[in-house]
Length: 278
Image (cartoon, rainbow, N blue to C red):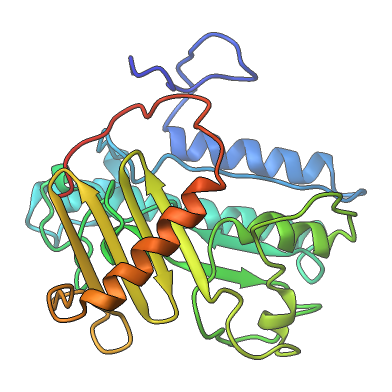
């Protein structure tokens, strides 16, 4: 509760919402849908669950009595509340006649953290939150828009959170006056465009920098001082580091990282926390 980004309402003082926070956010989202049902709207619903601190409503905890491990049971109860909340939001769209013509995107910011005490949380993928291994950056990304998108379609290749802005702007026919790193995913999701929206993706956190070019992914770190090279097509769980066998590829991908980083402005604020790559 004492972190600098504790929950606030409209930039005001930190507050204690009535009831369980996941349910509170759901109530607010449903109210927003009801209030704006007669005009276009954009709703960004960022649940805290299942972020730390791991805290669940007693009824949800008791509903999972078959889960023996206490921590896993609390975590599961938080997911139960999240799932129920998403269901209530979707129900609100249906009740307001908005279900068919609303684009809904469901995703997560990162995989689970090592300090939760759940060693299998990100299996089969390697790594934790605050790294750029697949266990952190490979998350669910679902899109639903019955009026425009076919049900059950799958898109090849990675999509990213930076694509949400371009996709939402395209869905709203909103003009975009500047160049975007993100890609409008609607043609890919509808099947109008084949292939992958991104051939190259970059990540960086201080001196920890990563590029994915096609199926190849290079991570460069200072703490520890090393590199990892993986072929995600053959090794999606990143078990075989090929950096020693592929020095030329490492050099080429490192050059791509340096070239991209040289185009980036300096961060406007320092990282809240930078730790060694686990």
